[in-house]
Image (cartoon, rainbow, N blue to C red; front, side, top):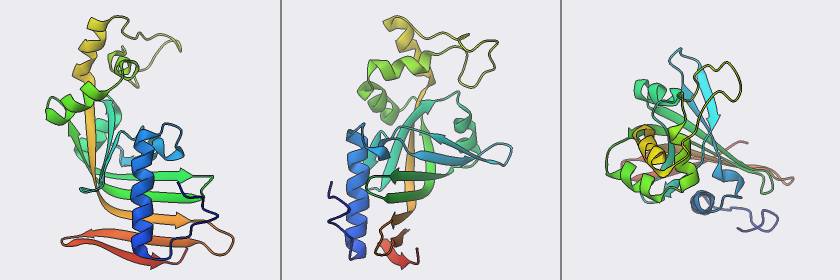
Length: 199
């Protein structure tokens, strides 16, 4: 990735290309600070909820993000009630923040879920066999179990889901001593529209 000391986006097209490149890299590079964004959803109680997820896919053509989660997790009920979702990515070294807003669809027992499950590492699959369900109250910190054989891990697939997020708006903020650069992009019927913003 180009060093921020040697690259300043001068056009909106350059900004959008940089956003797409950073998101694509974040999927493949586990060391990328953008590999684990914060998402925000509206809770069943109406309050905003935030948590970290692992970015599993970025489709530049559709402009869609994907992460995986347990169907028993509270965010599934939240997204089923209100599919609006927001992402916040930040790269401290590059001094770049990317925000994304869109709508999420939960996929389980379909072709997307199957592809996502089959592409997942064994250590990732283990998480979906945890008992009791994620977020359940425990008497002690270690009062839960994880699957310890292949059959039990495979059974956890019943709890696995892929969440596909169609992005409707993107914001880019580049922090620099010479003056920050901020812009916003919104999805239109005929493509994307960009606008510089005051930082």
